[in-house]
Amino acid sequence: MKSPPFDWKERYKDKIATPEAAIAAIPRGRRILIGSGAAEPNVLAQSLCAYGAHLADNEIVHLLTLGKAPYVEPGMEGRFRHTAFFIGSNVRKAVQEGRADFMPVFLSEIPMLIQSRRVRVDVALIQVSEPDRHGFVSLGVSVDIVRAAVDSADLVIAEVNPNMPRTYGDSFLPVDRIKHLVPVDYGLPEREVEPLDDVDRAIGKHVASLVPDRATLQMGIGKIPDAVLEALTERSDLGVHTEMFSDGVKKLVEKGIITGRAKTVLPGKIVTSFIMGSRDLYAWVNKNPLVEMRPSQFTNDPTVIARNDRMIAINSALAVDLTGQVAADTLLGRFFSGIGGQVDFIRGAAKSRGGKPIIALPSTAKNGTLSRIRPVFEEGAGVVTSRGDVHYIVTEFGVADLWGKNIRQRALALIEIAHPDFRSDLMAAAKARKYVTFDQAVPRREYPWEEAVVDELRSGEQILVRPARLSDEQPLTDMFYRLSDESTYLRFFGYKRYHPHDEMQKLVDLDYEANMAFVAETAGDQPQIIGMVRYDVDPATHLADIAFVVRDEWQNKGLGTLLMRRMTEVARERGLNGFTADVLSTNHGMLGIFHKSGLFVHTERRGNVYHLVATFDADDPHIQRV
Image (cartoon, rainbow, N blue to C red; front, side):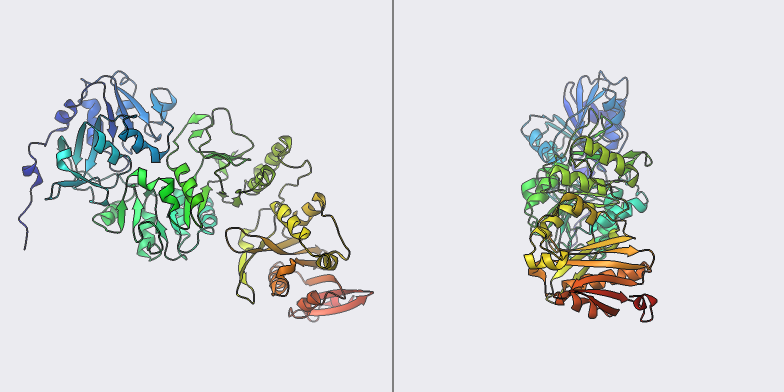
């Protein structure tokens, strides 16, 4: 049965008001909350100044707004004082010049502050969809802290915009709760997508390497989240539980990559508190049952976040110091943005089963003249995420896993992913602060992340084979001390009792050309190094002297063969002629690896040692020289 036409303006004509009349209803000395993001009531926000001559000592609060903010302009001090829960570009100058205030607070706790009236909201200015015939409007693309405000405010004034999508979840509000309805008709502000550059894509690729199938994602809005989403096209059954999202999520849904089927909290739903993006995105979320809008006290509650298995939290930063502290709300000692939801999601993901908290940032700022990885922060810098909360730091130069690492290990790992132009200075600063040993080497070359591969043993176990790096010194030392006496003897031709720092550092101090090494690492969230192979090139012959070591419990599983195969691939790519090696005559396993390698092997016995020359070419003249 077809329903008769519904005219909301006729039904609620007693609530309809002009912007001027609506602003006139606001008393002096009250706190006014302005709706967030793309749902900011732009007409009402501008009307505060245009029609608010009667106002005095009113405080304006909001999370993040996209429009102009005339209430923070010079000359408005007598009428308005703004407090930012998160500093956007439209109020940043006012905050830095002292004409507005900043409240450092976790996003998850803002609704509680409002509901408890510790941060009392007297007036809520919001933007909503048109009412339905049941008398409900939708908060549309912004529920976040607005939900708490409309539930707590004494006076609610709403712009009613036919362009505001009706979203599902905790987004509906009865018209009876609204004092004045102000009809408007304008397109929601769209987020302009910035083109990705090589740095963004490199960061996105490194972050994506940490994301498994069936993971649940939290990401913000910006170039790095866009780059991460672009790099996830080979994943399957991803989910989303985030405080905000943009068009990249829509694209992965349409490709069948985001399904939400594996989520453990609200499976099948994209859970968020606000949305900013294109007109197409706003049309897509309209009456879309896939999208579940929830307030910030739900989306950002660390205990709720932690209930999502494989929760991957991806957040950005302005700088990171060598101990792992993260500065995200200040820049060069001045307030710049805010705490937002970073700590909420970092802590929630850390408690998730299989979760990973990630901080991603470019290695430099100011056109490459300033390192974002710092020895220490400048005076006035604020630590948003503590060194105790940090797990993964990602730049375009790689991934530093800091969780469970001491300061020396952290400093080394962070210097490895700093921009090469700043590594020497960072290492000098680390030495001056006694973070690292006085003789610690500086990475000589950019780490070749692209050389890492996942391979499979005969048993089906997956192993990561990747180039060794300086920060592998400690785990490799641990591996060597866990070798049996027999394995130690076969590797070092003697019963070696000590593995001093200078020796181990030389083992991992590589240029990835004249000397190369790969480590074999177990899969999973707590990888262990279980084997290593290294070669050093003789420039006269272009043959590489090669040596292997495999932990006892991983021997006879094909790991040595796997490492030999990988080294052969790399040596061929680099134009080498083959390998040389000295192997004890009793080391039958290693001799077998060479003779089954497919290379052309010449063997010469020298006492109890075999000298091997293994070449790629059967007619290589180096065989004849032995």
